[in-house]
Image (cartoon, rainbow, N blue to C red; front, side, top):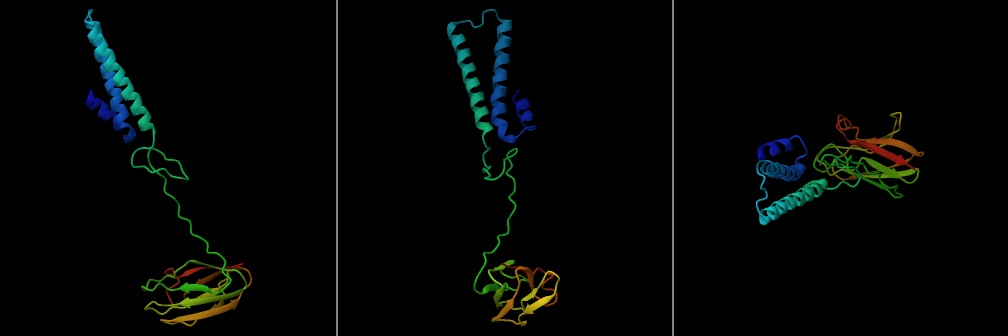
Length: 199
């Protein structure tokens, strides 16, 4: 009987196994008591035997009810997810959101990855006015620059291509969205680019 109960649990959520075992024990006990009662006209044979049967039945009913309540909760190991429902004990994966930088009145700070990876330290720059100044630092062992282009791909300004140190690029740009990137061949294609938003 226990093998059948265990096998049945494989078709359901594993977190409900305790409930299935408790319910299976209750069903098995009910079958045993019924079989003994049908075969013997003198069951229970004594008052103490009747009380024992009732006590075992009550314990099994309480155990099954407790397991039903316990397994109805979030399964162990599954952490509640604040913005989504837990389905079958599986927490949905959160979609990462790229933060938008706050508009900056002063110079915008931008840096190349110092370890030599072809990336900047941010993917978004936001200027609070049309007078845009970008302070670019390159501590990478590779040559880099910062180039600004409009939505049509026209280059509006660029720093020198250099290794070590920093350079400043100042432009007057109408409000809108622009692209900043490194124009060294292959660097933009490898991911060294981002979005400049002018308020």
